[in-house]
Length: 96
Length: 482
Image (cartoon, rainbow over all chains, first blue to last red; front, side):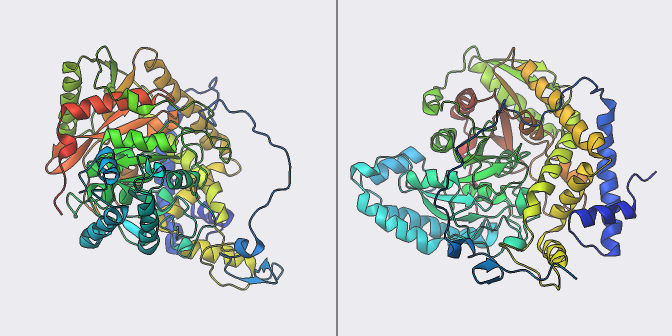
């Protein structure tokens, strides 16, 4: 039985801000289903009392003083922006 | 020229038998003669490099030229940012991106006065094992250009194997330094997670990514790590642990060393010839006074699934920043949401989309515990496997990859077959330990890699074993004919 449906793929694509035509949806449905089937093998393991590893090192929060420091000039910061106006990044309308 | 070691080159420069300009020019000459076959580079920095070489020549013979890496040409993987030098991560989406700052590793190499000759091709955003996922063109294996160089640091390994540069930087998330180093017959180290700063590395999976050196010899590799390693306040995950003198470990002495050989690393699926090469290497180490025993890393078979869930989840979050707003190639649309969607759909290649989809799914509401959290728990079990073995042994040894390089096009249509190729390198990243790949012979004319895995922050022992083996054999002297 298929674990992943076309509808799920469309939903996830929207969350990930990707657009897909029907043939891509079909392909990703099959491929994600294969990968998730492989992932199901993890369920063979009893992990009830196992702590998850988020990080291999024993890390603690690193704090620093919140102090104003010199940084990029506005001109530099905008250097790679595809579009700009009046010293700001420009994007199309957010509202319909 | 390009069979020279770092210390030989240093001595030639120091005695003024060679100028930095001549050395850097010889790198570009070699690039010009073989690059059409190898395609290791993404961007060349000829003007900048020759200019830098000229100013370094003025320092030759002075106190300022004492550093061992002084004046040596280097290639840098294209997911490591270089100020003013185009950095694409092999993605069309970043095809025009000129970074505003240097990665910490680049700063350190510049402080050591190396000369960056160019940026090296890779799988897009480091996602792949063959370089076929580059958004621009695929690098080829210098030993046989019908074969892949491995990935994702395929350009980094191929450029060193082809003699275009003496050494390069790669990055390794699930084997991306060691696997191409094995396929191209060079030396590649993935340091302990936290050993080298990731600041300025375009993030793929932040809990797994690590930058490391690719070189012709173990000694050269140790020189490079000496320069790269250490805490960086710009990367809070870089470890505040002292950096030892790696060169002092290159003694050739492995007497009494205890080697563990996981039975899972010589199991079904590992090519017979690869297995025999590894057994021959173990015999050699035995002759040198080490002992080895078979052990088990029982959760090895779960590593690939664990890795793809975790790395893709982290990638889906890390790659959210590529939206065409502040940098990159923006696709035009009438509203902002469509700009995001079009930019990402046109800019990302298929493998990158597949990983983003998998990661977004694994993190989405209703699936988080079943997939993401489950994988994090299995990661603990895999990490514990290593810790248990290291209670009784100094290093773990096995092959770097189950097979030598495969043909271009052979695995690209089936993601799962491609992923399985990383089965022996992935567990190392999940555990965060260091590992090196060194050449251990040729199989049908293609290099085979020996993987030596060490304890957390014990690169010294890894280098000691790798160096002793290398010096007792001639495998590192074999070079491809191009």
